[in-house]
Image 1 (spheres, rainbow, N blue to C red):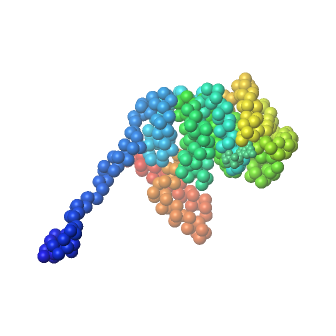
Image 2 (tube, protein in one colour):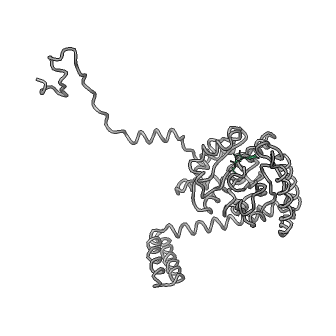
Image 3 (cartoon, rainbow, N blue to C red):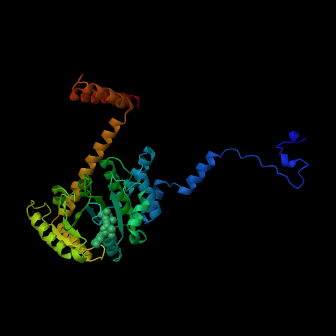
Length: 379
Ligand code: GDP
C-alpha cells in the first residue's frame, strides 16, 4: 500500500508503471562552524610572529606589510599589542623618506594628480606609498576598490603601494594610525610617502603634523569660499598648485596663480624661511608635474641645509607623543564601564541643572581616579 512505504509517493504505486520517484538523500547536518572559521582564516592568510612580520616588512613584502597595517588599524587589544611590537622593531629602519601631504577639496583632482606625480616618481626608480586620511568620508567605505579605480596606473605599479584611509573613527585615532603606517612603509623601503586628505576639515592640521612638505591643490575661477579652503590651510601650504590648467582654462589658471601669489605675500613668513610657491599644472595632461617635483626638491634642499627639516620632524615626534598619551588617557576614561554609566547620569543632572558641568566633570574624574587606584591594588 502506498501509505505503508517510507517517503511514499503516489507515483511509486504499481498502477503508475514507468513513473517512479527516487528516494532522496538525508539532509546534511548543519554547517560545521569550526571548519568554516578555519577555512576563512586560511583564506585570509596565516598570522605571523612579530619577528616574521618585521622580517617580511624589511624585505619589502607587500602582503605582510598590508597585514601589519591591518593590525595597526585594528582596535582589538591583542592586535594593537602586536602592532606596537612591530612598530618598535621597525622604527630604527624608518624616517628615511620624503613625506608629502596633499590636500584640496573633492573634485580638485587629487587622485589624478597623485597618479601623475606618483608615476613621475616611480619612473625614477623610487618607491612610493600613498596613504589617505579621511575619517569622515563615505568614499572610504569599502574603498580598497574605490581607491584602486581612482589611481588605476599607480595601483598596478610595483613601486607603488596605495592604502586607503583607516575606517572611520576619531580624527586623532585615524591620524595616529596613519602615522604608524608611515613607519611601517618606510621600513619596507618606501622612500616617498604621499598622504592625501580632503581639504575641508580638521584633517589638514593632522596631516601637516606628519609631513615634510604640504601641497594645496586649487582650481582657477572658484572663490576660496567655494573651495572650502580656510585661510589657515593656505597658511600651512609650502606650495599651492592650480590644477586643471588645460584647454580654455590655461589663462584663468595663470591669473589665479598671480592672485594666490599676492595673497601669500600677506601671510607671515613661515618658520622654514621658505617662500611658498604657486604653480599651475594639468594632472590630466601631466603638464607642470616635473616643475612641482623640482619645487619640492628645492624646498627639501633649503630646509635640510638650514636645519628646519630635522627641527620639524622633532617637533612632530613630540607632538605625536603627546597626542598618543592624550588619546590613550581619553580612551581609558571613556571606555571604563562604570564611568560610562555615571556619565549618562551626570549628563542628565547637568541638563536638569541639578549640578554644574564642572562639578559633574570633577566627580567623574575623581571616581575614575578611585577606580584606577583600586585596579592597581588588585594587580
Ligand atoms: P579628487 O576628488 O580631488 O580626487 O579629484 P579627481 O582626481 O577624482 O578628479 C575629479 C575630476 O576632475 C575627474 O573627472 C578628473 O578627470 C578631472 N580632472 C582631474 N585633473 C584634471 C586636470 O588636470 N584637467 C582637467 N581638465 N580635468 C581634471
